[in-house]
Length: 106
Length: 229
Image 1 (tube, rainbow over the protein chains, first blue to last red):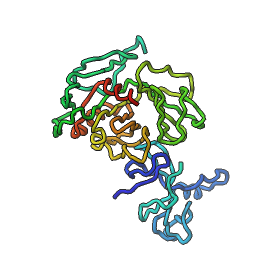
Image 2: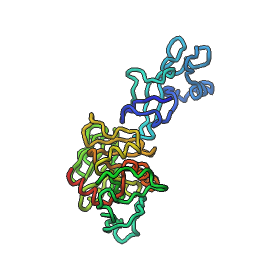
Image 3: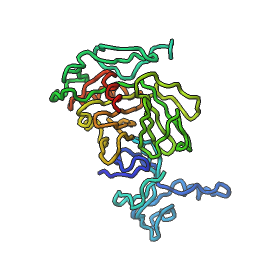
Image 4: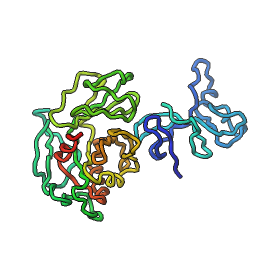
């Protein structure tokens, strides 16, 4: 199975040119007063595609829609076989398609 | 580099040079024996000759340009800079040809400058944003009729998109190796890649491109074609 991503420099390219860099998880929490649990949740928890809010801490993560189902998510990708740029895009992991307007941003 | 040890290209063609010259410590092959014969140039892919392929007359030729000087330029405000007195193309993927020098806009902050024309290369200006990368890269040119057919054996990239205005830059995999590729015309494509891939890359390109008649040639073939740009 293959699909294409939109690199902000090179345009649409085959997924095999890219390396997945993980979900966008928002800014790192402020260090003063940061508890071990809060830090752990920021580092470890991600949205689970198709999972309800009860399935984990996913709904608390950046980009999780209300209602718990992870329809789309922000992701980091690296165009290692091309221009070498890291960028973010919004993609629906259920269809592997970028959402409209979700093309790469540096 | 005068007076220093000879510089060696990562690409070695197993063919007899007919004309060479020493330039900045490099031994540059201007022409190989048999090169001039129609369809009779040496095929140097490793292993058995692949298919042979029909003679394409003066078909696509692979030229080693690793001795050509190259620079990277990086600046957060690159659009306002003129490295080596060259205007930086405003859009990613655009290429400017200014006499013997070519400047490629790579991304928001970087451009590459290649010396591809005839004559001596310019000295590297004292500019902290400029880095000479000649010795870290391999550079190859694909010249002649049949270049698109040869490159179709090497990469899934569309290097001849009619919607783009030549010359243009593509950054992507050729033989799975990340390359900077400039399409000057359907019969002239130049690519730069990391030096460490150079030898195996050239051998594999000849083996795979040989299916479309790809053969080696000396620098003279490239010089003649680039002079028409």
